[in-house]
Length: 543
Ligand code: VG1
Ligand code: CO
Image (cartoon, rainbow, N blue to C red; front, side, top):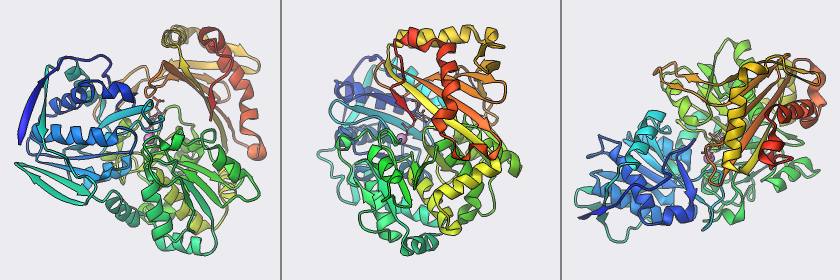
C-alpha cells in the first residue's frame, strides 16, 4: 500500500456547526478542502491505529468521490477496517446503529441532511463517536483546533474501489468491508416493534404514503414498509436516492412537502402521510386532515410508547431541545418522568441516553428518537406511530385530539428568516442579549413579558456547559418566544423564531394553530425589531 503525505495549510471556515461541517459542494471540491477536514478528524482521534470506522452517506452529489477519499485516508492513517454501506449509502440512524453494533471507534457520515443537494447544493461531513452519537462539543472543538494547524495529510493509493458489491477487499494491513445498507437497521427495527400487528394493520386496508424525497430513506422504506410489512406497492414514493434529490428540498415540512400535505388534506387522503429528510433522521407525520407538529408528535409518542414492545416497561425519562414545545413536559409531569431541556442538536442527548436517564428524545425540527441508536431516526418514528395506530385502531386525528384533551394544547410554530445578512443577524441577537434585563414587564397588546434569558445548558452527566444557546422570552400565562441563529445553513444567516402558546382547556381542539399564535408573532416581531434590522417584512418559511 503506497502512502503519500501531502503538504497543505489551514483553510478558512472549517468550524463544525450544529451537525458537522456543511458547505457548498464546490467548496468541498476545492483542493485539499475535504482532505484537510478528514485529516483533522483523524488527528483528533488518538486511538485510531488498528481501529474500525463506519462510513456512509445520503447519496448526494459528491458522495462517491468523498467515500473514495475517506477510505484511502483512513487506510493511510492506520485504521484496520472501514465498513461502508453498499453504494456508499447509509442513513444517519443506520450508521449510528452500525457503529454501536460493530463497536467501531466511530463513523463518518457524509451528508448535509436537510439542505438541498446537487452540484451547486450542499455537502457535509459529520463524525460520530463510539457510542454512535454526534461528536460532543469537546471533540468538535478539538477537530476545529486541528484544522487551524494542519500542515499535511496522508492518503493511500488503493486503486479503484468497488463499493457496489457486498463483500470484503483486503489490502496490505487494511480491510474494506462493503455491507448491506438496510439489513442491520431493519433487524434492529424488528426487535423494537410489533411487526405482526403493523402487518395486520396494513392487511386490514390501512393506507399510507411515505415520501422519501429521492433521498436516503428510499431503500429502507421500500424494504421495511412494502417488503416486510406488506404495505401496498406505491406506498413509498420518490424511493430512489438521487444525487440532487430530484430537485426536492429534503427538509420534511408541510411547505417542502406541499403535494403530500395537500393529499393528506384531501378527500383521497390515506390514513397516514409521512416523509423523511436527506439523511433519514427526521420525520414528518400528517394524519388525514391533521399535520402533527413535531413537538406534539414527541409528546404523543412518549405518552403511547408503551404500546410498542421495546418500551413496554415504560420510559426512563424524556429529553427535548429547548426550542421544542413543552407538550412533552406535560406528559413527563403526569407520568412522573424526568424531563431534560437541552440545546439544539442531537449531540446533547447522547450523555443522557448513555447514562440511562432518558429513553425518548425529540426536537421541534422533526427529529425524534430513542435509546436504540444515538441519532434521531425518521423511520423509527413512523414505525412507532404505526405500532401505536395498529394497537389503538383510531385515526391520527383522534389520537392527537384525545392527547390535547388530556394534556392541553401547545400551539406552536417556527418562523425562519433565511439567508439574512450575517452582520444584521448578529446585531439583532446582540441587541436582544443586551436588553434581557430590561424586557421584564414589556407589554405588547395583552402580552406581558415575565422573564427573559439566554439559554445555557449544564450537562448533568459530564458537567460541561454550553452558553448562548438561544434567547428565551417568557410571557405571563405561559407563552414563549425563542430566538436563535441556525448552525446548519451555508449562505448568510438564518434567524429562527420559535413561538409557543399553551391552552389547558378543551376549547382549543378545533382552533387554528396559526391564528392562535398571531398576537405572539406580532410581539416577537416588535421585541426583536426584525423588519428594521433584517429588512424582511415576513419570514421565508413558516412551519
Ligand atoms: C437544525 C435544527 C436542529 C437539528 C439540526 C440538524 O439546526 O434546528 O434541531 O438538530 O438542524 O438536523 P439549526 O442549527 O439549523 O437550527 V439534520 O436532520 O439537518 O442533521
Ligand atoms: Co437530517
